[in-house]
Image (cartoon, rainbow, N blue to C red; front, side):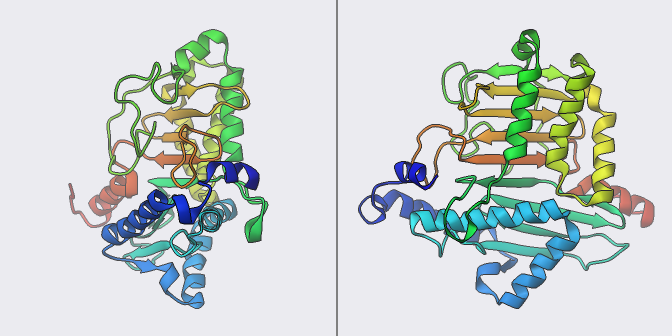
Length: 331
């Protein structure tokens, strides 16, 4: 993989790195500007960082914790590739706590940085873990201290398997466009920062029309495969909230839509979205930001999970809590 990344990287950071340096500086400044609060993990002690990771371990499933940590590790791998580990580091993230940790009262936390944004609300035994954004560029490492780490393999493999299991008629219904950039994409569908994502930053409670193939038009096996794909995105939740969330999604399975952009052979990049009244999941292969591939490639992945219709950040759960427990109506 390093040889591939070597092709994608500029030949010399010193000679051709002006754009990349500027991009990295903008990223650093953006983190500062957007973060008027929170604890920068790269500016604190090992003990404090370990305490923060303890919150993640206690809140997430084992898989959720490992995926989050591996996003952070691959961020450092990217920093080493481009010669900027002080900016793209393992600990270049900001952690915030909202309220006081409690077994009864609402509280939550946020972990934010490059390719990682987790928002967790806890009320008693209830948990909301959206919006959740995880990504990596590149999505795997084959050298250095993090060699062997690879992310989003299940999300890619299961998505492809579902798409390939569809009949030609079903595929025609699912496919929104064949091109990832330009071509037959609808005008304005591609965004310079979010690419094909519709649920990116600053898109809270965006109303997105359903597209693609309804699960009610799938076979029983295809619906099972769709749920297996959804489960890969819900897996970061601990067992109780995971079971509750999957049950909620399954209750709305007939209303769930699956859409696709791009090819579905072994090498083509692609985008897909799973959307229902209670779930909004996106997978997208991106072009290079710090690497220099001008078109989307499988080594740069972004994933987004949201809870539509007002429950990102647990807003609707929080509203219900205050209405029932405190007799307070909040808008």
